[in-house]
Image 1: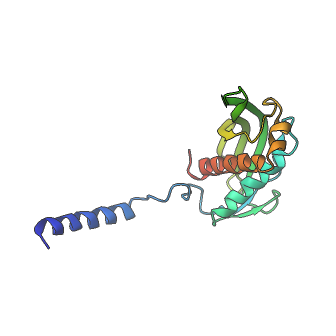
Image 2: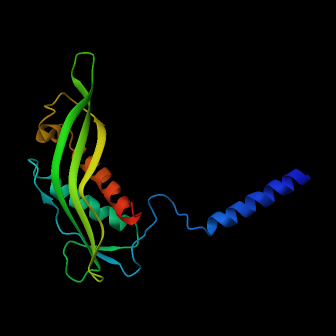
Image 3: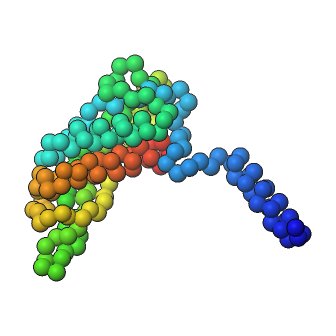
Length: 180
């Protein structure tokens, strides 16, 4: 082993040791919540959109996302919890973002605006909130649909609402846990 190899290994070991002690964690798995928060109440999100299922689906996906983080017990109510996450889906818009050769929409941008508040019940303080949380994603269209009608868009692909809800939930939970 050459002197250069030894020096490279020593530097790599030092860098690894420094990184291990500096507070880094895997993206999406860190948490800046107080240690006493173990049980989170997530009541059904209020839905003010024309698409009736969006509140139910988004609430369930946010609950699932918190559970998947492994540190939290989630309840559908606010009794006996350490923190409460309240959500209100304010709007859901669908707009074409690209078109096929025959001028049919082939991709859509879905924009969800929500009011989200995460409150520490024990300390009686808001930990994180955003009154106009904006979530945007692009999705392929399986068939030609009326871009202004969420029922038509989600009706054409049974998994579309689930995919939007899952990605929405990941963005909300990451923002709360990673203190953005």
